[in-house]
Each structure stands twice: as structure tokens, then as C-alpha cells.
Amino acid sequence: MKKIFSTLLIAICFFSFASAQEVVNGPAISLDKKVHDYGTITQGANGACEFIVTNTGTEPLLITKCKGSCGCTVPKCDKDPIMPGATSSISVKYDTKRIGPINKSVTITSNATNEPTKVVRIKGKVQAADLGDKSGVPVKQKSTGAPTNK
Image (tube, rainbow, N blue to C red; front, side, top):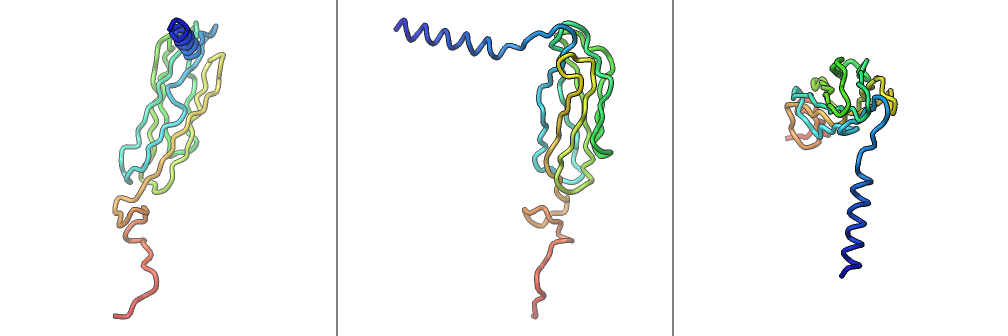
């Protein structure tokens, strides 16, 4: 019984130590996720999402630039310093008027010593608002096949 308890205690300590974030000297950037998946959304839906930035370093983190991979992806980041241990958010707005797959990126530039340039992604699919079937093809554009004689 003591062996099982000791082994269990060692395993818990190991996993606790392994999951702890390492503090970096200087500013350091950490994000809550690398990818935001919209899934399948309807044309004209709200294309907003958010990435949470944490400064895991010992000095203020300055985000100097956030740039979308195209004009349909517009990020907004706070230019105020993020103090050690504090968080901020980067909001991203995708233009959902465009039908089809979403696979875009946002490049974050900062003074972080661990990753001065960080890239996050958004993905998903925008389907037409006037759907006729599960394939995502608008009713007006759906192929009906060969003409039939009635």
C-alpha cells in the first residue's frame, strides 16, 4: 500500500512540475491557443474571436504589431505594456461575407525574448445563408443535373 501511495505521489508531483509555466527573464509571450476554429458558420455571422496573451516573463511585454494575412482578417491588439503575470487580448474579426473555407493567420510582433514573432491561425468554413442542402452549396447555384422531360 505504501508503494502504491508513494508511486502515485511521485507521479502527481512530476505532472505538476511538468505543467508549470517556466518564467523567462525579460518579457515573454504565451497565448491561450494557437488556432481558433469557427467550425461551420453562416454567411454574415459574427466573425469575431479572441486570443488571450499572457506575459510569462519578468519585464513588461510590448506588442508592437498585429497583422492579418489578408484584408478579410483584421486583428486588433492593445499597445499598452502587459506587465509580468498580466493578460491582454487580441481580437480578430473575419469577414464572413466570403463563402468557403477559412484558413488565415495573424502575425504578432512583440519584444518577447522567447518568441518575438508569433503566428496564430483562424480556420473554419462559411456557408451560404440560403442553403438548400448540407453540402453548403446555395440553392440558387446548386446543380440539378441533366434536364428531365415531364
